[in-house]
Length: 128
Image (cartoon, rainbow, N blue to C red):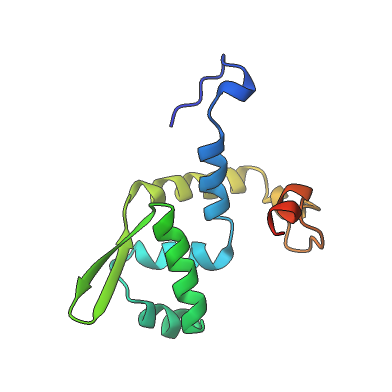
């Protein structure tokens, strides 16, 4: 997606980008994506390697799949999941560069930092 900097903010089509970032906004999903960057993985592998309950791993893989970031390949009774778009790892590498250049200042954010205690109003309303 290219964001036209000259277009009015409401015409930029930023909703898909916001949805993409929300889909990656959970540390567990980021761990799953990182693990998938090394190759195919089954949910049972994720539960063992990441120490997750099966239902949690399945829920996060389903979220990534529904967002089009992950695809599954059936083999016998197993489903092997992999990244649908390896360029996702390029985006995450750029994210690491940005975080390094800001000194990880985002971690101090009172809204999204690790010590935040309140969700933004939009997320609170969507949770209802």
